[in-house]
Length: 212
Image 1: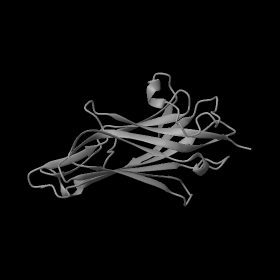
Image 2: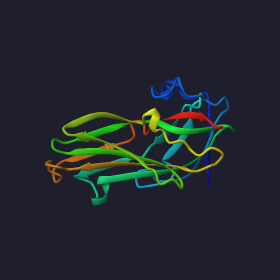
Image 3: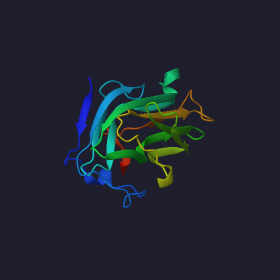
Image 4: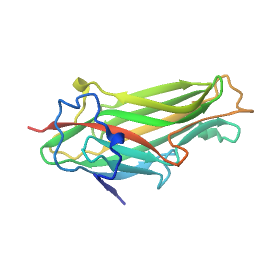
């Protein structure tokens, strides 16, 4: 079953500040966009734990996770060191426009023992397009605090969806934690893409272009 998400004015505007890249130079469609979440797969986003919302001004959409945690050490299973989530989105845009992802903001919490490491990684691609953009961010222990990472794309390098075609957009995110020189037999290191209230927002900023 498809999950359909419409733009709504009830979303906090602060979560959808327009990106620095191209925010003033590129047009924004006057009508709302609709995002259908075709599939959500991965160990970091079991069924019912990821949701998508679109900003009122059509410049961003947010993915909210409630069960996204990678860990190593005491109490961990051998496969817990890596968690991932692949979103397959159908983005319906107003006629005469196309879009690209200009930047993506990720947030979460990390507890990394001295010597342990954590990595957040994401890749982006349109269905049927061989081009894949990938960026990663590394964190080192000791750390016991919130973390934030931003992927940005230079305006000149923006990859837009083909005009007049609907191609699913795929986002594959990953959290990975390594024990490193810490002792996994007596400590636990973990990294989440969630918060104490069970959700954290990952914001993807859109850049728009008018089709010929």
